[in-house]
Length: 479
Image (tube, rainbow, N blue to C red; front, side, top):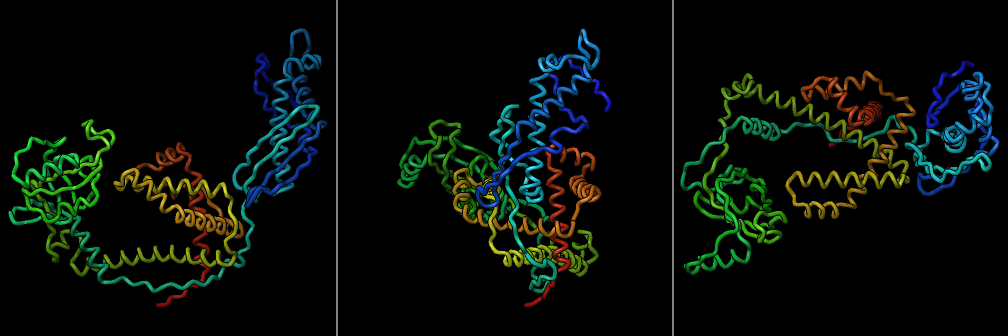
């Protein structure tokens, strides 16, 4: 065996030795028992006897002794007690880590089976000494043990694909809207409509003061009451609920039907950082005056318009839209078929238990996504929290269903040896790059930076397995 040329001048040197000689760990004796902690959760208790620990430490010290040169001694001839004095602590630490790893792998293989374990186990309660040996515990999450029967030939019934004429009309209207133009509404008799772009002046009133203000106006009395704040020429695109910095529920209902020059009202709760201190966290009224109205004007639906939009004629446009909608329906059908197959397989096996920690983590993630989604949509923080709380049971059911589908797909992938190649990953990265208008190398770098390449591979694996199930299913169309 060749000597290792280590620099041992620093006693804190990290000796992560993998020497190639027969460490005691390679044929280590150990005892291991498994306890059930709940559904898909186990506790693995492992003990490595003192003699194995002493052999591992002795091997490592001897290896260092043969390779190191100490002042006053020829290479390999330094006394063992001197080596122990210099390197003992580091060697014992390395031996512990090595035996932990080897003992974990061996106990897992003998008692549980690595293929049944989800993720990495959590090692705890480690006790180590040459006299007492090594003892540790590992908390493991395991895959559910399920039998889905034959996953091929599952029959699913779905309605036939049909593109309706009204769907084509709506798609063409969306094209017209996208190519439309916002124009000022000059008719003095015109009123605000639900999708207008408005320019408005806004007065912000505390609710109680606004009530006194309206009473004074109604009785034609003079009043010195003034709004907390005024804004001029704010833009608002209905039916949005956001008016500058104010979140206003039913804003469109407050303004639709008003003419230019008329006032509308909307109730709000002012934020805790409102710039006028007296208004912070107070109920308020926004008094809104319509200054100008712009409205979307769409071109008349003619062959000339279709040609300007890049189509030969209206007939060609309808045909192309029909084909595009047909493709979308077919993509949707694939997903529908896959869900029906998974539903049928789940019905066979029943509502099998799931790893509780995994369920809790996925529920937490789903609730966080729901909250962020509602905030992006303009919902106030408290309203978003309340909505998440209200949907908690629904979120749990959906998470559990998704996880059960995951384990069914995982079983099918193992049966069929479904694999994801680097070519598959490169192709997916190229698609992402094309959609973003970026170079594939830049996208890969970004994915690696955020540690999501594993998720890309998981998605590809799931897509391949779903496609396999769909290809082997018996799809029956029925009205």
